[in-house]
Image (cartoon, rainbow, N blue to C red; front, side):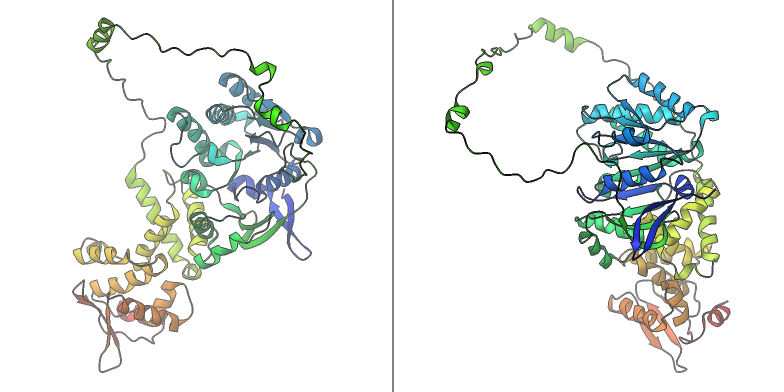
Amino acid sequence: MKVEVDMGTAGPGRPAMLDLEELLATRLLVQGNSGSGKSHLLRRLLEQSAPWVQQCVIDPEGDFVTLSDKFGHVVVDAQRTENELTRIAGRIRQHRVSVVLNLEGLDVEQQMRAAAAFLGGLFDAERDHWYPMLVVVDEAQLFAPAAAGEVADEARKVSLGAMTNLMCRGRKRGLAGVIATQRLAKLAKNVAAEASNFLMGRTFLDIDMARAADLLGMDRRQAEMFRDLARGHFVALGPALSRRPLPVVIGPVETQARSSSPKLMPLPEAPEDARDLIFTAGPEEERPRPVRRPPPPTPTADLIAQLSRPKPAPEPEAEPVFPAIDEAEREAGIETVLREILEDPDAGFRTDAVLYQDFLVRCRIRRVPGDPLPLSTFRRRLAVARAGVDIDIAGSSQWTKALELSETLPDDLQGVFLLVARAAVAKAACPSNAELARAYGTHSERRAQRLLTFFEERGLLVVRTDFHGRRILAFPDLDCETLPGDPNAPATAQQDAAE
């Protein structure tokens, strides 16, 4: 059964629909600075999907407890022991009740421990109770920080592990993570990378705008648009939302948060005795304060006894929770998936972000072990795979030097450079303009020809022409050059000639 949730409008008279069944399988990431409308978006999603799926909200500020009045969510106060929270979470999955875990009133470390215990109870439920559940985590950077902060390292590890289980392994258990964060740079990458659907709101920092643009497959110059987004305006992408970046305006909600943005209001009239009220202590302040005395010094004999104690034996290393990953099997799986992507004739004309989403889906289908490749690493591996290097060339010093030179180029140009460098190292014919255009992901041969001019201006290669008008590319740093090739030949004809 296909259920679509109305998130608002995507244009004049056009509703923005979200495929709820697809969302349960692919998860969602929401980013936006404070005041951009993230909580409003989550509330809209929860209200629209409440009749169709069980929900759990990890609420650090107590803003979503008002859902209980309208939609019957049970509010769970997190001021309990961790064992109690774990048992409550198991009963929630058993009886299929929608809940809000209210973390208000706890400090950050207590919130992390409570959320980890609760998510652990949802994750470890019995197999018979693995019903579909939407798990919404607001301010996800608190529970899955990218770097260690002021909280205890143990609390951070426990919370990060629970969030990783939710996003990486929760799908098989029916748990669909929906995480919202103010800054992508503060969110752990292995947690953010598991989301296949994105709703990006207003943000100002360059690093966050760049990461948002990369995830949406947009040009770096288009990233400036995130500064101009109004409150409640987001850019959507993903299999549950849209196959291309789509501007979305979130619709109204039926419930309201208990807290709201402060409103300006006039100051009261200053009382005549304002000075006395400020500088005169009240009756409750006149009680004598306790005098703090320094602790007595430790006797010398006790210090000597402490220093002479033998060091405790080191604790044995804990056995890994998950089985060791076979790196050879993982590399073979990644190579197979990359080969499948490149066999698609239209893959050369798709953006890296679209290919990256396809890569993640194929890795899950083939059960490739380990964490997925980051987007930057995927781009690098894809560029090398497009060059089509065999085993003999891959082990040569010339190809190693070519890889080092390619790292000085922008990501979108590395594949083209490695293609022509492989032809030189393998002593093959110079690729035609059609082949260069395909490697660059464009149909314009003139644009591909300009890439060679760019490489030549960088001193990476030298372009020359023989007496028959065929092109030769010489690489001074590699001490090799391509065989003559017709620059105007079609891609298929040039490939046959090279073979």
